[in-house]
Length: 105
Image (cartoon, rainbow, N blue to C red; front, side, top):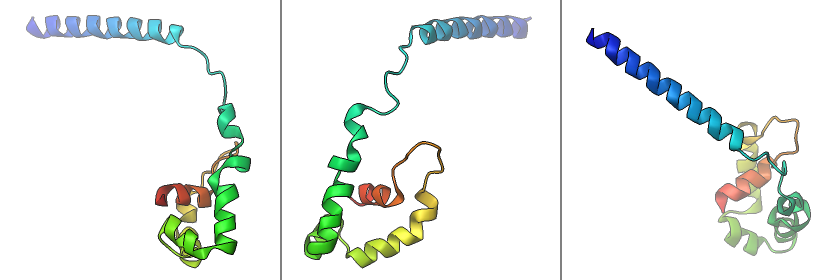
């Protein structure tokens, strides 16, 4: 008898939770953007595309201060971890080098 009461109360709670979840889901706003406009221009304004290539070519000391490693060490580390951090997606994703740079910073 007690088990039936517990099961009944549990079913009532689950139904109540499901109704509340459905109500909240219907209120949810649809997404406006797939990628926010401010982040769409990261290839123009982002550090990986504008700052890092300049440091790599003309100022290796600044590159070392920025990443705490030489450009050769960065390339070696990228070669080691690239298969694990590369996303396989149809959309344009963050490159493995940029992911590593973000992680090291």
